[in-house]
Amino acid sequence: MGGAHRSHHRPGHSPVHTLPAHCKLVAVLCFVLAVACTPRTALWAFGLYALLLAAVAALARVPPGLLARRLLIGVPFTAFALLLPFVVPGEHTTVLGLPLSVPGLWGAWNILAKATLGVTASLLLAATTEPRALLLGLQRLGLPAQLTQIASFMLRYGEVVTDELRRMSVARGSRGFEARGVRQWGVLAKTAGALFIRSYERGERVHLAMASRGYTGSPPALDHPAATRTQWAYAAVLPAAAFTVCLLGVTL
Amino acid sequence: MHVPDGFINAPVSLAAGATAAAALAISLRGARRESAAGPATALGPHPESTAPLAGLLAAFVFATQMLNFPVAAGTSGHLLGGALAAILVGPFTGVLCVSVVLLTQSLLFADGGLTALGVNIVLMGVVTVAVAYGVFRALLAVLPRARRSVTAASFAAALISVPASAAAFTLLHAVGGTTDVPTGTVLAAMTGVHTLIGVGEAVITALTVGAVLAVRPDLVHGARGLAPALKLRVGGRLVDATTVTAPGPAASASSSASSSAVSSRRVRLAGLAAALVLAGGVSFYASASPDGLEKVAADHGIDAKVRDHPAAGSPLADYGVADLTDPRLSVGLAGVIGVGATAALGIGLFHLTTRNRRRRRHRRRRPARAPETP
Image 1: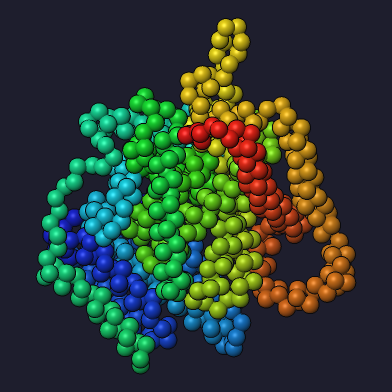
Image 2: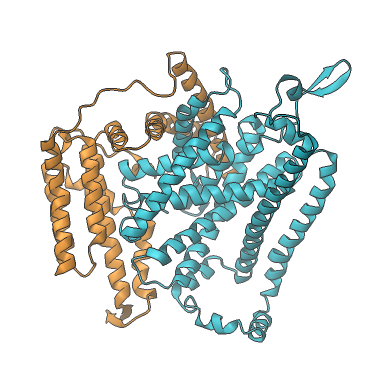
């Protein structure tokens, strides 16, 4: 669990890293939309998408090991996808003595391919963009400032609260506690309760500290230069290529 | 739980995104009201404390999802947190917290697809929180005013909210799913598995709410009306402190729940208990003789539909039942959930109508007085 929730950001100075966050956000969103709209029978289109992402990863110098490791962490829905060939009605084919449904196989392929491409694109975005810059990019794209603020507070204090949880776990462990089964849930729930109270009180303290420094509901705006036309053009390469592939996939 | 890209088609994903945006806009407005009416900070109620508080609470939801609850040898589960957030901090702030967690998970940790973000927010943020809070409020309306009722209500709220979210997923899948799985199979598999998850979620949520209630009952949003009104002795008589200082919503709420309400509360409680016993217990034993049930179905011509049911004979349907180990238990559980959902809906409607009537009577009695500002 803990491994899955560490930020994937890899600092760097590649052309992908230096693009403004909101350009990258739009690019990734358009890319994923194009992938989602591609008919599942166009197998070659998904190969081209994977090549596009590989090119971006190479340009950003993101180690392929990082992507592969993250992709291996099973999503529960992968299990759902793998069940599809057995439950979908329709004509059946026999593979290795197992009767598999053809529409079910297509469905499983569809989910696995699109989900994998989507996760890879999001991973590339997270790896090449600072978390704070991502939130500011979202705000530039029209996300309400209040929501961005909540998210940035969450990011800023996420580590603090997680550390608090870890300290409590160390304290429990050093008193001989071992969570073995359902019988220990009471203690763990008390931990969660204590964590809630501590988070709430920390929230109050943070608010008071900010109010005493003149906070009135919005943080001082930092000046972030708007993206130039060239930067937009660079960012548009990926979604433009993806839409072309998608169009080809629909028509061919 | 997170729906990845490519599971729901693009138009439905976009529609869900628009729904999520609307829900977030409403929640932002509501959360400001909730933090303004919250337990007084040293500065008094301040609507601009929404962002720091909600941010810290989102971090709390995020951290609790890492707290592993061991189930049996080797396996463990974790809290989803929708019901817990709704009860602890209120429905609007709860929606905000869960949605922000989902947003950052999708952007920074690649959990759940970007195009599916709207779907995820609607399912796990909006539906879970709304159902949990609705059930919670409805149960509190009938249960006696005690700390134990809050814990019991949070148990039921969490228990129903998780399968409700699974049912909502089934609905989205039926409208815009990219797979050809029959809707009945999806419903059976999703609600079957998620009922089990819901039981775990319910136990953890109830225990956690109980733990907070024991230490800081004033922080639990769902238990706000619970504390007895502060009384002041003025000239030898006990007077409500709130009426002395400033008339607030708490004063009217506590005065309306006076001794006359107790008897009707007892009647309502008895009715609900009877329904639950019938649904849970009797169906538990009734299903011991499935022939009888089938006979009833045949007599009423229901079994024609049952035989066509696409879930029958599929391994997923077997999976759901096999996981529940005891088919009687699963039927009983389904009955309890059904009664809970129906009761929540009915009580909610009843509450709305009676409140309107009470308010009208109130207005008629004192027409000259200007409306109070809360």
